[in-house]
Length: 201
Image (cartoon, rainbow, N blue to C red):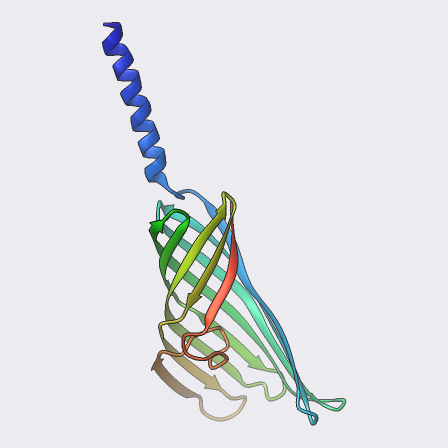
C-alpha cells in the first residue's frame, strides 16, 4: 500500500512538472516599443521628427501572444524661423504573434499586425487616415527570465489610406506590396531589419 501511495505521489509530481513545462510563457506580460528621433538639414530647411510607440502584450497560450501599441509621430519642417510643414499622427497597432522553438534560447515567430494611423497637417488642416495589415517574421533570443532581444522584418503589407483636405473632395489610395510598414511608409528599404528589446514580467 505504501509503495502504491508513493508511486501515486511521484506520478502526480511528474504530471505537475509536465504541465508547468507545457505552459511555456502563458500568463506572462511583456512590454516593448519603438522610439526614434531624427533631424535632417539640407541647408535650406530643417526637418525634425520623432516617433514614440510603447507596446504591451500578454501570452494567451504557451507560444501565442497578443499586444497593442499606441503612440505618436510628430514632424516639423522649418525654413529659417518659419515653419513650412508640421504634422501630428496618432498610431494604434494591435498584433498577434506565434512562436516556434529553434533550440535552446532561440525562437522564431510570425507576427500579424493591424497598424492604423490618424494624422493631421497643422499647416493646411488636411487629415490622413490609413489602415494596414502587416505580416512580419522574426527571431527572438531569451537573454534571461525577464528580457529578450528580437529582430524582425516586414514580409508584406496591405495599406488603405484616405486624404481628407480642409476643402474639396477626399482621395483614397490602396497599396499591396512588400515594403516594410514601419509606421512611416517608405522610410525603410524592402526587408529592412528592426531590432529591439522585450521585457517580460
